[in-house]
Image (tube, rainbow over all chains, first blue to last red; front, side, top):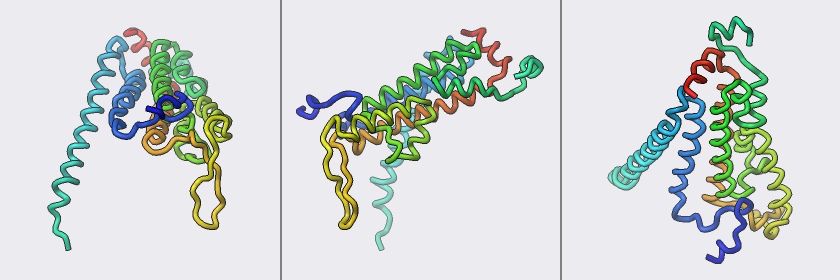
Length: 83
Length: 159
């Protein structure tokens, strides 16, 4: 809490980012979708829908990769024989 | 772009649109007549930059320490150089925070670092947001420079 009081936004980095950093994937995927769909969407009337879909695709893909890697690291790798 | 190329939809390179798109994200599309598209590109690039600097602070852009990342960040145009200059003047000079001795191996020169510099996740994400903004703007630059007249007209109908 003391760190937050001393923090100067946009000059110093966000303090106490420790455990919630995975949530930053949300604004990251929104930002990427905003730019990419602005370039690629043919009819800009569908822009908001396309941005939402692409954001969800990125988040679901990253969550899926996270689950796959968790299975490999937590369950499969410990099953390997130790020499 | 020649009139013939424009009429046939043939792809040519438009250097003016590329330069404008680098100077201000979205300006390349704007001068090509796609104002809404240019505005949305600017909105997206600005969003990534604001998030990146908010999370990582000014130290997210550091040409001397993170040289390769800076190449990607510079794709966004002069803003990358401006933020790097602010980092030098505000953080690295000690105007904000305090300059302390950096850990160094025995016999190595001891550098001064600021207590306000970004480390760990905050720094990584700040760099990632701003570098991705630069890379996405590179896509926008290529799109603005190679978009054919036929494409513009067709997409303009939907806006």
